[in-house]
Image (cartoon, rainbow, N blue to C red; front, side, top):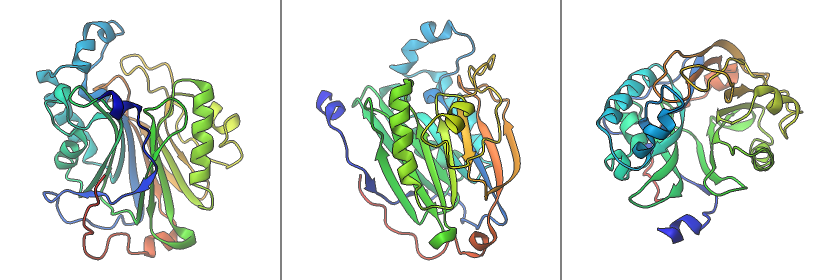
Length: 290
């Protein structure tokens, strides 16, 4: 187990996993509904002292977790593209349920992907997750620089200069490591005109837009409402950042205190050229190994 934790994986291209139980995928129409949610592996935290009294749930299963995942799955069903942080890929604490796959089934998402960032064997499978109603034309798994255990998922929808790039991430707590990670992510989106960055970024929007390696990209932060802690929000650390060419239609921090973070929702209008592209078409590709 320790060797799995020490080894650093290389970036790589993958195919999204297919959920055979999902209904037929459809195109997004004129808009795309996005959600980012740190679900804290299905643990419900409602007070600071719960971090101590419920800490055992990070190691052992608990019957409340299944009910929380059911609530989360119901919430996710209203969205087209979801970024999940702090999900478990199937270990003792999650009753060996891959939470990303399980939420794809609950939300009727045709495509999903689990990014395993810390492999602690049967004890924990710390992961990010992707759920999508659209099949990405590109999916890349990137471990982020700095302390091991952080990652980003790069997605592309459509082709050519009008393609949409989406990066899902969970960034480090420390400012120096976070700056290195944002510099890496900036390189990932180089050359893309239409970009979305979404996830738990562990810092405020003003820091991201004014002082980070992203500062000269002209990105917009539609919401600056606090998302953490969910029971008494004080810090805005969960974000969906947009390139200026993407028109915002709606945004909200959802009143859903299931985790210790509140989910962030944004609806954007797709660029005309991208709407005309067939974002979901052709036969389903065979999933690749990880």
